[in-house]
Length: 372
Ligand SMILES: *Cc1c(COP(=O)(O)O)cnc(C)c1O
Image (cartoon, rainbow, N blue to C red; front, side, top):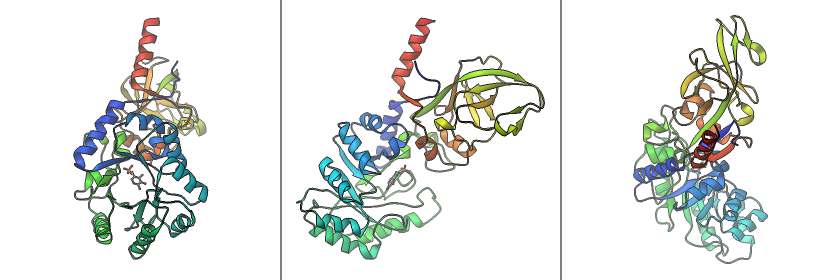
């Protein structure tokens, strides 16, 4: 039995999106960024489905350990690196590659008595002002790592773009120029571009690209949907109609009763809410698909349920299929109605939502039909 609120993953879409990355960044190797539980799609599951990818990147050491324990053999970069001795032990034990962004990490590396065991990525802060050494500190950090017995050579080099989704802003060009200037003459592979960098800018693909959101079929640009870039959504969030009722003019719907019927109407209750990761900030009017037809959310989102206007959906009945985002309803659009970005919606899908691969969802439908 598939629970009411479930997310169906389309792995053919995932593979299609990887091909789009290859088209944008011809010749570059791909480090698939699958932090935050694979942007809500399931860490191990997505890594398994990307078996031909060159490398993976995660944010934290424990995410890298999970991938190794799931049998993932590719290189794994840990974007936040480490800040404790025990994390360094795990990195070495599981063959993970930390990003070095702070001098305290080099102190730790110099204090361990191991030879050439750890591959590392040295990060330049080229203007994001989050992690990384600034241009003045970078060379000294590189030299220390070069001399450090615990570090395998050559050291890989990276930076991160702060505004690559704004094509009219020259920050990206300045960041890239600075990265090239500071790293010229250093041995080691380079990586600069996230999804917006890959799709929006040329000449910044370097040796490795680091796509995250675009792998999942979603656009990093606020005025575009994944489909505009030829990407296909991997996740479709589904639920079902739990109840249908007829309301009268003046009836108030949901907590707070903020939404009031201005006419007699048919209303549906859908089994999804913020307890599943559907955003509480979604306003009345947010589109929802009932049997593939667009209807509108009405009233406040509660923990387990939402209400929709079924006035234009006369044939809808209890048990019918509902789509909250995904195929035919871009998550980018829902993010706008919820005053957020698609990243938070995908990452925010909660444990309660069963995640299923498309082939199994289709099989369940066949089982249901043969029983009927
Ligand atoms: C998350 C992240 C990425 C991927 O970003 P997207 O916008 O999802 O493509 C790349 N590099 C770093 C350092 C990141 O933190």
